[in-house]
Length: 437
Image 1 (cartoon, rainbow, N blue to C red):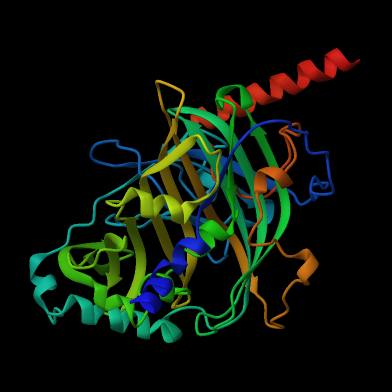
Image 2: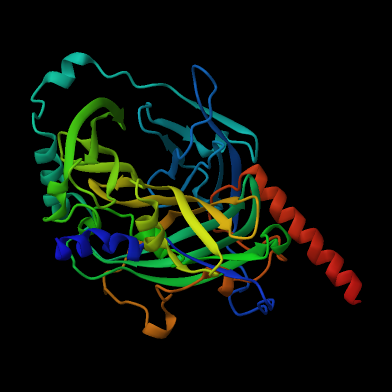
């Protein structure tokens, strides 16, 4: 069991690790070469919201792609989007898709610069089509899907541009925010080589007044989200040995891009005592393709889970994870699928031995692929140019002083609460500049 346990838990070492310590002294990070000049490419910017046509409900994590290109973005947790398109491509269409809804194609020329409202219609699945050639064994379907990754997912090395954001909240208030544009050197899905990440731009803000003299730092940066790519790294959750620790069952059916999708629920067997996962896998049943996965860590034994994530903390502080959840979405281009978006969310409680009250924090890391091209040479960045897997992005990034920091790069539209946090830090920077004059 010892060997198996190490393999099952390896995923936690690859994913989110927290460093929690008392603040004694903090030095602002100097402006560095990360804050490069934006390119001069002419582009058009469009923003708005994607909603359910019948009830006007916001659709979270809907995908918007410029037709015939690899440029894409995703809606945030409020259903809002921000899409930047090169000026010479505004005669194309934008394709809007969401799991369980009919895909919509909209001329970019018909969009306004802001306040666009795009409504999608629910795609109804007929019972008759569910019963045709329906698989009977859920675990067998999952195994076949993993085994067919070499033929269904990218077979070429790929250079991807991605937007990454991580936040830390105390209750509902943002206390730390870091964002980055990164280059991902994605190796083929059939390759055993790990992906490499290169930092291009980054910025941050931290409100230490709200942190109760505790500095919360997230180790791993973009790797936290990259390793949620189950089809690239199946060994971190469904290895050949560990998959037997789970029970799988058919739950329901839905559609995406006119494809019939089976939803497979999974959970660890009751006899397995170590904390594993439970969640849902969304599988294209005809082609055996994983299109999305949403899953969480079982945290019944909170002490074991705490040891997996907390790297460092003061002696008088206990940190108890309350929720750890993951999500990954894939996109399709010319019959091949690739990693498009992932997120990691963790909520935890901080107990001080000498305080009556505890503090509840949540941290989120998310990354979206906004463009990509084939890396036919297979060239990888030199070691000194790669982000280390031990990176703490908040220590590497600069402040929020440049309003045009991202230029033409697509980003995930910030939620209203994050926008407020950014405006606050910008006001603080302006006051500091005036006081220093």
